[in-house]
Structures are given as C-alpha cells and as structure tokens.
Length: 309
Image 1 (tube, rainbow, N blue to C red):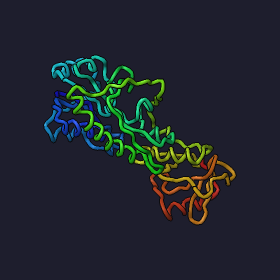
Image 2: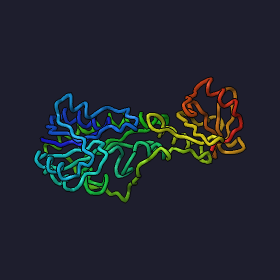
Image 3: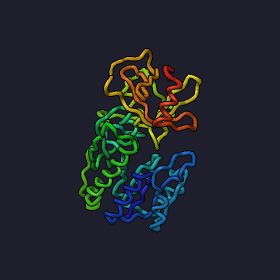
Image 4: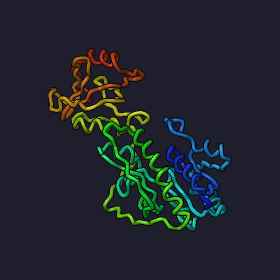
C-alpha cells in the first residue's frame, strides 16, 4: 500500500511507526523545519526518515504546484496526515484512490481545530481521545474511521496527556490500518453540529485572571505549563510572573482574602486568593529567576499582601 505521509511532532512519529508495523510502503514524508523560536521538546520526523532512507521534504507551502506534481507522480494509494501543521488543498486530497486520512487529538466531533490537548485541560474535561478520519475541505470534519477514548486525570498536564494520546494513537492505528488495507474499514459520518471547534492558542492566552475560580486557574496552569509557554500574571511593577506549577487549596475553598490576586504566606506556604478559593504556588519564575521551595517562600515573604493582576 503506497502512501505519502505528512507528519510532525511525536504524534507524527507514532503514526509513521504504526504504518511500518502494518507494512505500508511509505513512499515519502512531508514535514516541517523546526522553528528556532519554538521549544522543540518533541522527536524529529526528519531524523526518523533519514535513518530509514525515506525521502523527506519540508516545503514552506506544500500546496504549490511543484509539490502537487511531485505527489501526483508518486501515485499514492493513500495519504496520511499525522499532526502536520498545514491544511492540504483538495488537489492533494483528491489524488489517492483509497483516500486521505488525518489523525486528530480529540474524540471528534468535539474539539475540532487547533490545540485540542491544551483546550480540553483549559476547559476541565475528564476525557478526550484520538480519531482517525477522512480529510475533507473543512477541518476535522470528515467521516470517522476509528476512535479511542482517553481518560484525563486531575493531575494531568498537557505533556502527560499528549503522551497518553500518542500511545492510544498507536493502538488505534494498529487496529484500523489492516482493515483499511483490506478495504474493510468502517466509515462513520460526523455530525459536527454536535461537537465543538477551537482555534489556535498563543502565549498571551496564558494570562491568569485572579477573579476566576481556583479550579479554572489550576486548569489553565496545567494546560500550558512546560514545555508550553506557561501561565502568567503581572506583578505590581508591571513585570511578568510565570507560574509553572500550582494547585488548588483543598482545605480552604471559601473566599478568605480581601482581593482576588492577593498573596498570603502561611506556615511556609504561599497562597493566592482567587474569585473562589485559593491557589497554592509551588514553582514560579520572575524574569530569569526560577523559584521553588525556600526560595519561593522568601521571595513572597518580602511581598506579603501584594496583589497580582
């Protein structure tokens, strides 16, 4: 089964490895050059392809005519997209006679669009999933081939959840790729009116509003903590305070402070009042200074009662 694969990130590697296990012929791979301004904490599709002598290309715009002609000349039976960051034109999607397929990191039709791993945590979901579906012009809207549910634990961060999804993606592909090769795979229409769509996120979306509940703030922190850009607030001098880890104060959920954002140091613990409950800080960064433990306590003892915004 000759395939052209569009892949990036660890999910791209999970998809490529599954294709190999299922004895698909990977004719070539399209990927992305790593962005020097991005924290590239994930594995390299380029390196994986080079180790196996599989041609790999990283064009700025794969939808240009020269690349469409190259894919046409390959005559792929199927096309796969595993966390490739660009939409593919219909001229590419219509080439393979056996279909073009995308692996998406949510349980469709919920959380169509960008950054589903981060969004499900921001919104406090307790489950998500992975879905393999037919690619159509509208993002993540094609018929479903297969899905697997993934539970979200209260302590899951985005990177923990992403690893879970990669594992489940491999299992899903191991189930459906043989069926696809045999022409026996299911094809289940989506009703996107029963789902949801979310756009991309940027670092400014990590700003904390201390008027929110402690639960909502905690969910934002775990959704964007390292290796993502991090949640943040503003100190009284106008500088930015990054909050890499914090938890809800389970013992005292009622409002006890004067103002949302007010800092309290109690028994060598640092709390911030929220609109409902408190957040306990564990790991913060002020400029280039990262603080945990005794360093964190001392930093806020000198700032007792300040109000973060």
